[in-house]
Image (cartoon, rainbow, N blue to C red; front, side, top):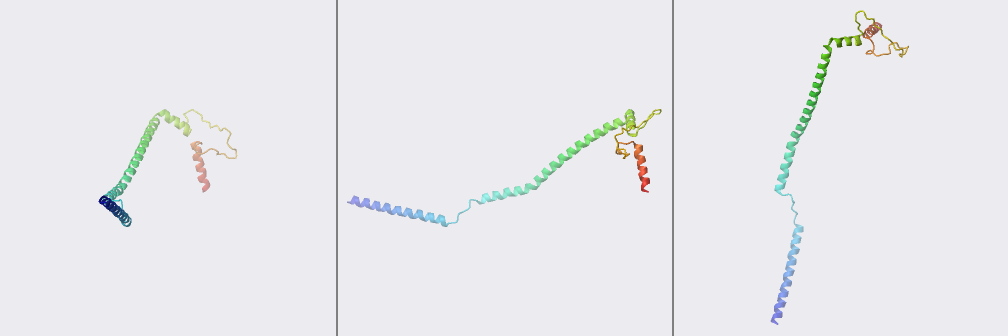
Length: 158
């Protein structure tokens, strides 16, 4: 019977221990529920976030300026290249104007100049409207017609 008592007392003890353990677990759960939850953001993480934000703010304006200046440099280089091409065209044109044959061709075509002894004719093709004598624009007509039309227009304004 002594063994039964020991067993009984051990079982009683285990039961009591189980009740105590259950009470401790219940209290721990209540403490967790009642205690304010701590944020996962630690002091180090907050400091790191502050440093990163400060770097972003500090570098945003210089980076914007850098990108802007790079695009301006590209534009200036493109304009310089266009200017070089234009200079080459003008040099070619200057070389053509230094040739007396080219100058003579231009004088004949643009100003209707003739060599001594030549007779010049202007042929109208008849496609112009007969009611409008000056159908062509000023650049299509002979220079002396434009000059004379200017004199006539000035005379009419008086």
